Length: 115
Length: 112
Image (cartoon, rainbow over all chains, first blue to last red; front, side, top):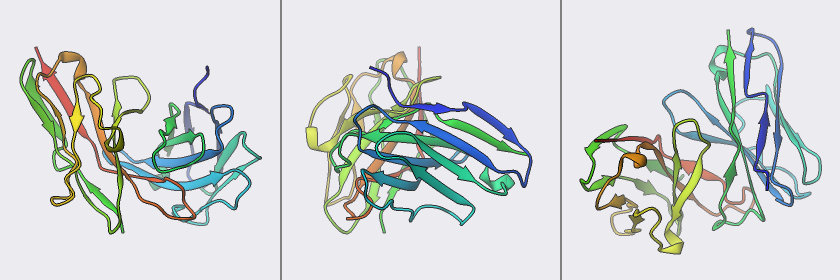
């Protein structure tokens, strides 16, 4: 079946502009995660959605970052007033129930460059 | 706080040689540990997890709670093993599911 998909694959924007990144999880997966990977670094957790529960936003670096998910479908990550330090690869992952032992399936990522 | 450390950013070995990618962690509870791999131009994917105690593509990893380590090993490296390897930890927080904490990764190159 289809894996996790993300769009766009690449995004170049100017400092101060808003950007919206999209993630389509694997159908039926209730858990969805966003991570950020800066150049030469590991992945950093940003936000977690589980079914209809309130999302865990504890990893969002500032209030310029927000994310939404409708039910168990698509999620969008929005970055307002982008800064150069926001340049990174943004990865989305999904898993069936969100338990500790589960495999997280990753999308290909969106590479964001803020000029 | 949970933390994962991979001390080697780069590791180069020759084909047929043994390889060990180091991973150390800090976590106050009982962690779940994983190795994820990213081959060139492919997405990040799970290689193995400690709870399964399995060997995948000849790789094994043993959780050593005393040394808080989860090193990845393979007795005979192959050229197709060249990739970026990430060690990851999943703690249990009621509000964040199985969020993963990643190390910075080790780029493995297997030379012919």
